[in-house]
Image (cartoon, rainbow, N blue to C red; front, side):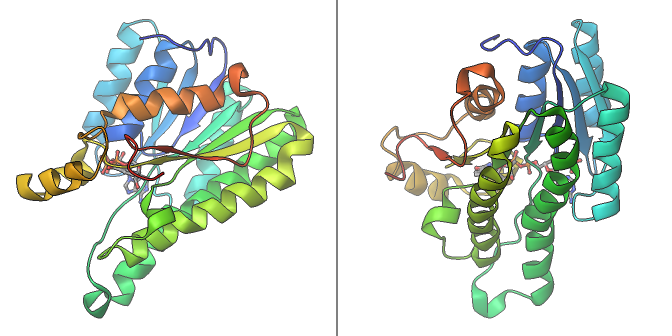
Length: 250
Ligand code: NAP
């Protein structure tokens, strides 16, 4: 479904091989953009998505990147700029969970979630800020979570990383607005992806019971909001955290 017109734009998306990132890649390519996306562990899946997009007349390129490695992230953004000729938008979507109550959470599980979900976003924003400032235009969309606002038992690492994205989003929005670079954060509630498929039906039912809409989101219901923040239609918005959660946090 085409909503916004991104014809001729160049976008970089981390974690485009599954779930929310895949939906973002497919939507932005269908809306006319040349999409550069990363995968981490699933090259076949990434290639299948790119092939389908190209067969439909779109432009998609996948590269293997570990977002917790600063050099790899910088290399990805450099490739986007050199092959795409510019970078109109960056979507920081890649993320992991390593849940556990704090008494049982290892320092390694704390660090790997912070490295991937928070430091990885810092690396990508830092690399993209320079070309965007030179262009005097750009959009950055960070994928946060409502648990970054509310906290969640068993997710001290994940919720801390997502809370960190709130501060990062607002700080960069203040730093970059005068250069016409806008930074916002989309904070999903429950989305039906591999990340949430580990939950039992009972756990899901309990979670859905607290959501006014009584259901989780499909990935494209997040992708459409990301597309808005990348579009001309959101030209007077920066530094915002938008919950996309069926009314869960209000
Ligand atoms: P997902 O289905 O588990 O997909 C995760 C994506 O991140 C995959 O493309 C994966 O690549 C990539 N990735 C994982 N580790 C990486 C690394 N170290 N470097 C680069 N890429 C890496 O997750 P999702 O549910 O779509 O979540 C996407 C984002 O939304 C995350 O930031 C998540 O925190 C956030 N979010 C999700 C929910 C939800 O309910 N699902 C709710 C709120 C926020 P490979 O496939 O190649 O491994």
